Length: 176
Image 1: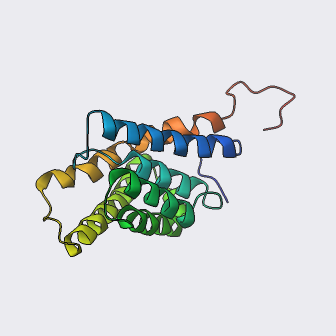
Image 2: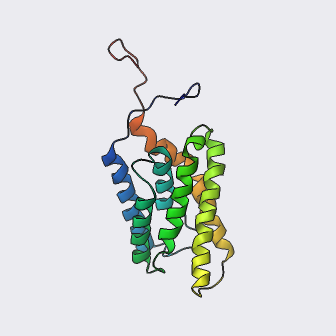
Protein backbone atom coordinates (compact mmCIF):
# COMPACT_ATOMS: atom_id res chain seq x y z
CA UNK A 1 0.00 0.00 0.00
CA UNK A 2 1.31 3.43 -0.91
CA UNK A 3 1.53 5.69 2.11
CA UNK A 4 0.45 9.31 2.31
CA UNK A 5 3.12 11.96 2.60
CA UNK A 6 4.09 12.52 6.21
CA UNK A 7 2.58 9.26 7.45
CA UNK A 8 4.88 7.35 9.79
CA UNK A 9 6.06 3.85 8.99
CA UNK A 10 4.82 1.59 11.77
CA UNK A 11 6.32 -1.55 13.24
CA UNK A 12 4.23 -4.74 13.04
CA UNK A 13 1.58 -5.03 15.73
CA UNK A 14 2.41 -7.42 18.53
CA UNK A 15 -0.41 -10.00 18.90
CA UNK A 16 0.10 -10.06 22.66
CA UNK A 17 -0.48 -6.30 22.77
CA UNK A 18 -3.60 -6.58 20.59
CA UNK A 19 -5.18 -9.30 22.72
CA UNK A 20 -3.96 -7.63 25.90
CA UNK A 21 -5.72 -4.39 25.03
CA UNK A 22 -8.93 -6.22 24.15
CA UNK A 23 -8.94 -8.24 27.36
CA UNK A 24 -7.89 -5.21 29.41
CA UNK A 25 -10.70 -3.08 28.01
CA UNK A 26 -13.16 -5.94 28.53
CA UNK A 27 -12.18 -6.26 32.19
CA UNK A 28 -12.12 -2.47 32.64
CA UNK A 29 -15.60 -2.13 31.17
CA UNK A 30 -16.92 -4.94 33.36
CA UNK A 31 -15.38 -3.31 36.43
CA UNK A 32 -16.88 0.07 35.53
CA UNK A 33 -20.33 -1.42 35.15
CA UNK A 34 -20.08 -3.19 38.47
CA UNK A 35 -18.57 -0.23 40.32
CA UNK A 36 -20.35 3.01 39.64
CA UNK A 37 -21.74 3.36 36.12
CA UNK A 38 -24.11 0.44 36.12
CA UNK A 39 -25.67 0.16 32.71
CA UNK A 40 -25.76 3.88 31.96
CA UNK A 41 -27.11 4.56 28.49
CA UNK A 42 -24.80 7.55 27.95
CA UNK A 43 -21.58 5.69 28.80
CA UNK A 44 -19.27 5.00 25.85
CA UNK A 45 -18.71 1.38 24.90
CA UNK A 46 -14.93 1.16 25.14
CA UNK A 47 -14.87 -2.44 23.98
CA UNK A 48 -16.66 -1.49 20.76
CA UNK A 49 -14.18 1.33 20.23
CA UNK A 50 -11.21 -0.99 20.72
CA UNK A 51 -12.77 -3.68 18.52
CA UNK A 52 -13.31 -1.24 15.67
CA UNK A 53 -9.78 0.12 16.05
CA UNK A 54 -8.13 -3.29 15.84
CA UNK A 55 -10.51 -4.43 13.10
CA UNK A 56 -9.51 -1.42 11.02
CA UNK A 57 -5.78 -1.69 11.73
CA UNK A 58 -5.41 -5.49 11.95
CA UNK A 59 -8.32 -7.08 10.01
CA UNK A 60 -6.54 -10.43 9.64
CA UNK A 61 -6.14 -10.84 13.39
CA UNK A 62 -9.33 -9.30 14.77
CA UNK A 63 -12.60 -9.67 12.92
CA UNK A 64 -16.23 -10.65 13.08
CA UNK A 65 -15.69 -13.88 15.00
CA UNK A 66 -13.78 -12.14 17.79
CA UNK A 67 -16.43 -9.43 17.90
CA UNK A 68 -19.18 -12.04 18.20
CA UNK A 69 -17.40 -13.85 21.02
CA UNK A 70 -16.69 -10.67 22.99
CA UNK A 71 -20.28 -9.54 22.41
CA UNK A 72 -21.56 -12.76 23.97
CA UNK A 73 -19.28 -12.21 26.97
CA UNK A 74 -20.69 -8.69 27.43
CA UNK A 75 -24.25 -9.99 27.09
CA UNK A 76 -23.66 -12.61 29.78
CA UNK A 77 -21.94 -10.12 32.08
CA UNK A 78 -24.67 -7.48 31.74
CA UNK A 79 -27.52 -9.97 31.89
CA UNK A 80 -28.76 -8.50 28.62
CA UNK A 81 -30.68 -10.28 25.92
CA UNK A 82 -28.27 -12.96 24.71
CA UNK A 83 -26.91 -11.97 21.32
CA UNK A 84 -27.74 -8.28 21.50
CA UNK A 85 -24.14 -7.05 21.76
CA UNK A 86 -22.87 -9.98 19.70
CA UNK A 87 -25.04 -8.96 16.76
CA UNK A 88 -24.17 -5.27 17.09
CA UNK A 89 -20.41 -5.92 17.43
CA UNK A 90 -20.42 -8.41 14.53
CA UNK A 91 -22.20 -6.04 12.14
CA UNK A 92 -20.04 -3.12 13.28
CA UNK A 93 -16.81 -5.06 12.74
CA UNK A 94 -18.00 -6.44 9.40
CA UNK A 95 -18.58 -2.91 8.16
CA UNK A 96 -15.25 -1.82 9.65
CA UNK A 97 -13.50 -4.54 7.63
CA UNK A 98 -15.30 -3.30 4.51
CA UNK A 99 -14.06 0.25 4.92
CA UNK A 100 -10.70 -0.33 6.62
CA UNK A 101 -8.52 0.46 3.59
CA UNK A 102 -10.42 3.62 2.80
CA UNK A 103 -10.57 4.72 6.43
CA UNK A 104 -6.80 4.63 6.88
CA UNK A 105 -6.31 7.19 4.11
CA UNK A 106 -8.33 9.85 5.91
CA UNK A 107 -7.16 12.28 8.54
CA UNK A 108 -8.40 11.83 12.12
CA UNK A 109 -11.42 14.12 11.67
CA UNK A 110 -12.81 12.19 8.70
CA UNK A 111 -12.01 8.90 10.40
CA UNK A 112 -14.01 10.07 13.39
CA UNK A 113 -16.98 10.85 11.17
CA UNK A 114 -16.84 7.40 9.59
CA UNK A 115 -16.57 5.50 12.86
CA UNK A 116 -19.38 7.63 14.31
CA UNK A 117 -21.68 6.07 11.74
CA UNK A 118 -20.51 2.59 12.75
CA UNK A 119 -21.15 3.32 16.42
CA UNK A 120 -24.58 4.82 15.72
CA UNK A 121 -25.52 1.73 13.72
CA UNK A 122 -24.33 -0.59 16.50
CA UNK A 123 -26.36 1.26 19.12
CA UNK A 124 -29.39 1.34 16.82
CA UNK A 125 -29.15 -2.44 16.36
CA UNK A 126 -28.98 -2.94 20.12
CA UNK A 127 -32.01 -0.73 20.59
CA UNK A 128 -33.89 -2.58 17.83
CA UNK A 129 -33.18 -5.97 19.40
CA UNK A 130 -34.33 -4.70 22.81
CA UNK A 131 -37.45 -3.16 21.25
CA UNK A 132 -38.33 -6.43 19.50
CA UNK A 133 -37.89 -8.25 22.80
CA UNK A 134 -40.37 -5.92 24.48
CA UNK A 135 -37.98 -3.63 26.32
CA UNK A 136 -38.84 0.06 26.49
CA UNK A 137 -38.18 2.62 23.81
CA UNK A 138 -35.02 4.67 23.44
CA UNK A 139 -34.28 7.66 25.59
CA UNK A 140 -32.32 10.76 24.67
CA UNK A 141 -29.30 9.68 26.72
CA UNK A 142 -28.68 6.74 24.38
CA UNK A 143 -27.67 9.17 21.64
CA UNK A 144 -24.69 10.35 23.69
CA UNK A 145 -22.85 7.01 23.79
CA UNK A 146 -21.88 6.89 20.07
CA UNK A 147 -20.84 10.53 20.23
CA UNK A 148 -18.55 9.82 23.20
CA UNK A 149 -17.10 6.80 21.41
CA UNK A 150 -16.39 8.78 18.25
CA UNK A 151 -14.84 11.58 20.30
CA UNK A 152 -12.48 9.02 21.85
CA UNK A 153 -11.35 7.69 18.45
CA UNK A 154 -8.32 10.05 18.05
CA UNK A 155 -7.17 9.29 21.59
CA UNK A 156 -7.51 5.55 20.99
CA UNK A 157 -5.53 5.90 17.77
CA UNK A 158 -2.67 7.68 19.52
CA UNK A 159 -2.59 5.29 22.49
CA UNK A 160 -2.99 2.01 20.62
CA UNK A 161 -0.52 2.86 17.84
CA UNK A 162 2.14 4.18 20.24
CA UNK A 163 4.01 0.84 20.61
CA UNK A 164 4.22 0.53 16.82
CA UNK A 165 5.84 3.89 16.16
CA UNK A 166 9.47 3.85 15.10
CA UNK A 167 12.21 5.81 16.82
CA UNK A 168 12.55 9.40 15.64
CA UNK A 169 16.35 9.43 15.70
CA UNK A 170 17.61 7.82 12.48
CA UNK A 171 21.09 6.35 12.37
CA UNK A 172 23.29 4.55 9.87
CA UNK A 173 22.50 1.09 11.19
CA UNK A 174 18.75 1.27 10.54
CA UNK A 175 17.80 1.53 6.88
CA UNK A 176 14.26 2.78 7.50
